[in-house]
Image (cartoon, rainbow over all chains, first blue to last red; front, side):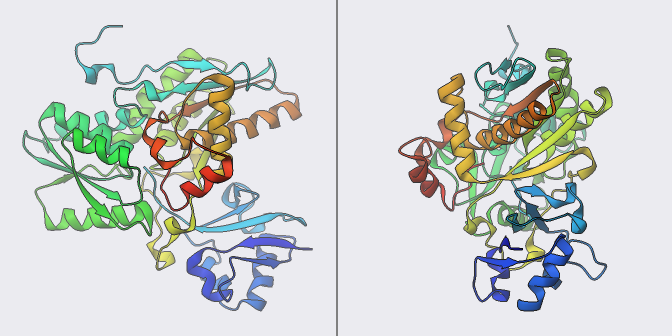
Length: 91
Length: 315
């Protein structure tokens, strides 16, 4: 099962500069665990010590914010696209 | 319609149906034309309310300096209101914003302090907070945390929508300060059972997300996720495609962020069609396309327009 994960510039130190990496997992948690096994430290930048998604990190599955899906338990399927972005201001 | 002054004419904008883009007679799209406001954007509502609230608190006297971090529209609205009221305005604006915005601000007499392109509006907020510390007599209205921003939409945009469209089922707007969605969304939730409140968030080029650290990220103090049903990230390609579709099919010349909102609105409309449920979907046209002509967004192919927008704050 392959899921493409787009990584923002500030986190590319964990992916050897790659803009997008491939991972597997049937939930977002499983996907992040899988990514962390090859890109050590990445998970810790997205998830707090309490196990929640970092306040200033937004994760989208097929362009929808996971906080309105199932959070870290959001179900994933083959071919889904995951995007990680820092929260930015607008207006 | 007659008004005593320009400031009195803010709001009460038209809500127009989109007969060609609506997927069926039962699932209809409606555009709230906020570009009909005095300075051409939805931000006139928040600017007027924030100034009025500060005046009520006794913070503003003629000659006082008002400070605001803005990527454009809020600054232009504030510049007009400040001009009318006799306040000096200093706007902190990221350098990767269109020339038209700078020209408009300058024409209204506002002063512009540029913040670095990398980091987008986050950096503008940081620079403005620094300036506020250095100039304690300046008044920063701070649209991201000012309850008057939300209140403007709770008291005007929400009631206007429901009055014009009592059968409303969905409301969709852009997510910037979150003021439009929080205010309108709260009002609609109180009056329309099961209303869907959807945020369309612009996804910019990489430069805009060029923070040095995740902890430089920013979530507006006004943001309350419980008001929303869902939130979508919309990239420049889809935003541009929908912006053009809005001109070609319905004759509406809107800014690029409106294309992103329309994209989310059409996504919701398709879900309703699939589910076989009737829907009246209202969305915000934030501004007209005039201020973005120099970006190249309206010329050439979609590919050309997309690459022209790279690195720019287009919403």
